[in-house]
Length: 273
Length: 284
Image 1 (spheres, rainbow over the protein chains, first blue to last red):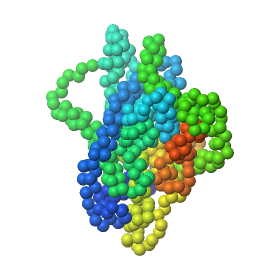
Image 2: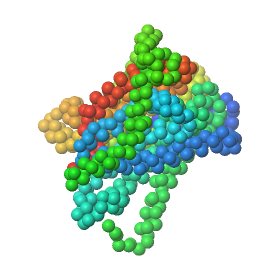
Image 3: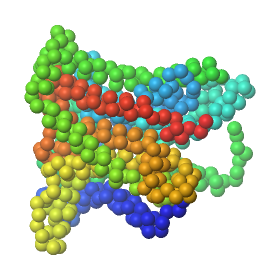
Image 4: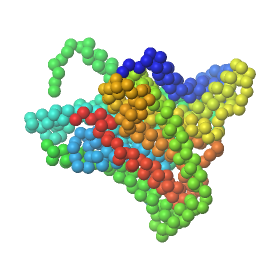
């Protein structure tokens, strides 16, 4: 069933409009971050990049970046591991409580994150744990490891169980199969799950709000400043945070491509497996 | 093979189950316990009374609840109407552009929600990107459009757009082209195809998308705080206030319980209705 030519054009225009609207707020922040004035009004008359210099010199900013980065890094590693096994239980193995497990895994994603953060705060209090950025890792994991599981599960669904069965028939142990058949086949899913985990943790605010204790992540600090009044550092740091996400994204997408193209220029080696 | 599957399935579920039991189920249990403690206490070792729930009923908190649920409902319906054509195009019309759109939307998700909302604040405020330029170019002055209910709903629509778009596109992709072709060959009108083929067959995607946007919007906080000023107080805001300024954990817990029960029953009902295997593209 072919769609009409005009309908097609309208739909493409709609799609482009959606992308523009999606990124419009970042355009405003971008302009605001290079405005010279202390009190922002559009149209911007004088441009200056001194706020970026100020932001990079500040030790508060360095602390915020370290905290955010440490949380994101640990969350990434843990959710890749947990998500890999979770995805196998979610999609690959036919076990008795699989369907119950699938539903249980989805629940945290549907949960209001602010309330989850508060619940964790009370739980840590009941356990006599003083909240710090370590506890924020736990909070992020509750929400991010199910997402990582789903991403890897999509890959695990498209996976042919005959490959594992063949390895088993040839006498491979369960551990060997996992390491030499399952893991390599799911690797692209695991890597994109890791990328999602990192970026979602880096940008997360509602889960960090109540669970970082005296420490503060970048999005948390930005929020505090936004509610308490305008500071020229807010758009600047916002832009820096966005910029960092894009750099990570480009590296994560670009490096494997580069390796691939380097490999393909080399003479073909016989493929193992 | 089947016995091995049973064992391996359980084993691989264990790490995730540990995370979820220790950091999701247990905290919710604590919230439930706290909600029946006497007010202004910070320990669960008191004799339970239900004073927090009594306060909740007598202090007019239902207004905040109504705002939260009402705005979530309006934004979900609007999101559905706005996203349907685009989701349809992503599943059936666009070719390479689907990938471009998907990447553009996913990448926007990686930017912190409050940074994007702050961007809207700078765009919409008096002297912001819109008003400032219109004043400079046309000399027309108008107050900003911030700090009211419609702008909060706009914020909700903006932030939760991906959560409607992707499940919807996935649902529509499940509608077989043959069915649409057959209906069209038999003389069904465009609307009839939409009503009798597209909507019912894409139902799992519609359920997941609507559920996600409704549930997330009902528990949202940043939209009403950043864009809405103090125009209305939403449920999540009341909960936060009870915990922070109020220092009343039992009241905060009771308020949370109300939100948890409402959202939880929606989520559980919705999740139990859809077959995850088929939505996520199982081949076997």
